[in-house]
Length: 194
Image (tube, rainbow, N blue to C red):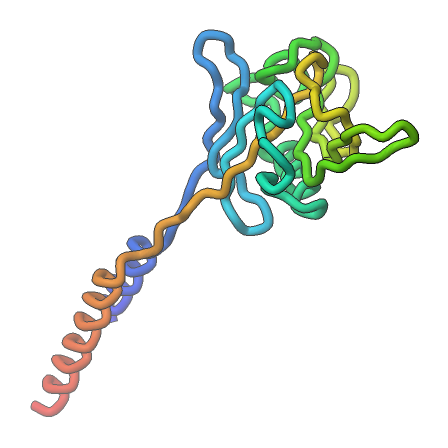
């Protein structure tokens, strides 16, 4: 029975995939530039915070990584996993520690999900959800419509999300575990016959 437990444990630990959240903090400035392995809706993503024009960062709306539901989930994941006070920095209470935000009171990180032309005097708008941090109130997620060029706003940045490819266990390892188990069962069968 000990062999089966060992076989199970070896298979479990060699086949399981785990990834730890990594905060990307500039070592010189202490500013949070983004994060790796953020868990959102059961998948892992990397995020980078970038101030600038929507067009310079994403190009057009076909390059957006989110729909409205995923944009909300991305923003919620930022609040729960990334924009927290930790030994790496007080990102929930010091907004100026977030890359691109220079306002000491608040910062909004926008995850866009659409770009369209509308309004009374039509102009381009970016729809998205924001993860907002402030030194005066708790962090929250909100829905926002912004001008595509937020580079001039010192308390807004874009969140650029990329999915992470997770490697699967090698088939050969699984095959070897299967063969080892079959051989073990055969040996047990032969011992019982004797």
